[in-house]
Length: 164
Image (cartoon, rainbow, N blue to C red; front, side, top):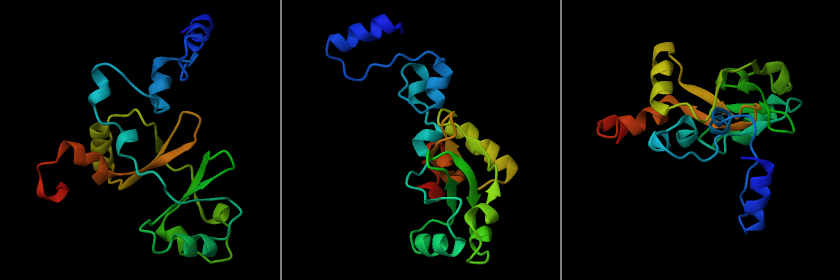
């Protein structure tokens, strides 16, 4: 939409007006609202678990482990002050020396996907690669959440007992 059209809509009282230049694909990848045929297809963004524990690179692994223990999470995403994903602490890394920093222990460059990827396709890819979870980020690398394979499979296997 042109800046002129955006200003006009705001003038008419619309509060959520976007002057978005990059592209429709980038819009969807950012997890923003979709319309049309694909809007009803469950996406990674739809099934990703929000509220995943995060930590700063300089935090001590022991403190992070203590903080997430008993929360039901088995990992922590290392992010900067802008919530850009830097790394991942899984159970193995969380078992490191408690005085080690998250940055020293983290898995660098974890696999990430965008929120607009169809959940079924992602579940298939994860199945083929033996991957249990994947970090979901915006195109700018900001954390959206964590998606487990079983969450991606659920919208397609609602009739099977293990997904009921």
